[in-house]
Length: 519
Image (cartoon, rainbow, N blue to C red; front, side, top):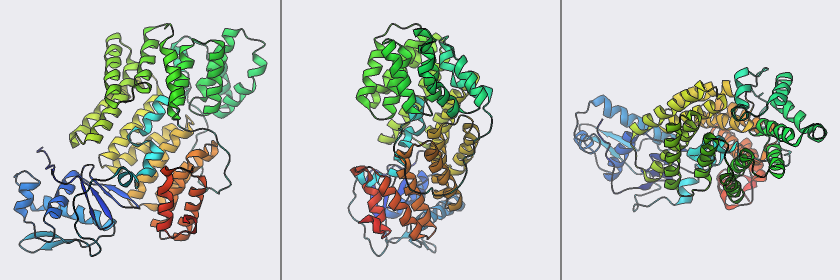
């Protein structure tokens, strides 16, 4: 495949009220953004370079297809896609067919071509802040890999749910999911009997967590100090992905009883890291690094987490993770290798996105690497890790522009994730499905999945992240021409939002809707 023309002059420009982000192949407005095929974006730039003038087929061959032979169907298809994308942003009829001469782009009446402008951080991120805030950008599913979730308990909200859709939880927890939940303890030869018995009996993670927590005060009198630490580790393993307040409480009590408990220190570092409390995360991982390790696997696990938590520069993280991965592979530690590889793919993708130093073919290579990770985790019975890796794959499929493929992957993940009952992970999957369907103008499906995402957080009392789903609910209502409902959702979003500049985009959008809440 020939390399696409990468225009050297424009990083971005404006077409009316739409930002054309050539560097990242996006069209951006205050209400939406769309990922554009690189070839389509290249054609758009040629048209912009020659705005108001007819561009011949030969020019497109030279500028976009590097002089290679081009069928009429290929050019027609590309122009058709470009027109459809522009139409979605309210600009229909900008690309004109000029018989026997080619195609011409006419600027919209309200805007004339200006000087090339770089997209400011705020301008570039504002339309996509919703996606970034929910999913953590490219690292969406990786947040869960290292830290469980970036959610904490907060006060209840009086707002009504966007819908009454039920979460699709199954009635029985599979044996593979039970084994997966306690894999870390079993690998270390630690007890799991009490938690497994409670989970099998109740068939509910929440009920098992509540039961173990309620019995903490009574069992301490009947167990030895070491046995009680084992009890707390079982509670921590159950709560890690589902009740962070209790997980932190259990691990902190372990550290009080056993200051050099490497697993408890590492788990606390991961939890605080995911919640953005970097000083605490770094202090705990530093303490973990200073402990006496019981095995090479334990040492590598700490080194892997330390590479992420204590290496702020992206390249520093990548270098440190590559060293851990090479050592894990040499030692036959396939679990550590798989998790490290998933981080490496994520950070390499993030780095390439920042510098725009990758081609379409790189997506296929990254996905192939993640599929190897997924297969290794499946062989180890790590269902909780398998689904996170699949979430990464789906996110990358989406970023590559295959929305239908991403939806199919997310739907399969959702079917399997429901048995693990991890509200934050359910929220990530459901929110991605809502976004993808909204991008495809399938608004009923978008609303259904967003309602489920809202419910997944509300049922777990994880209200801190609801703001962004209310914002999406407003966007869906607005796209459905229901301005009154959109304003109602924006009012709820603004009430739930933290008072910081990062949420200014909510008020901006409310003003665009002419909502009273924008004042």
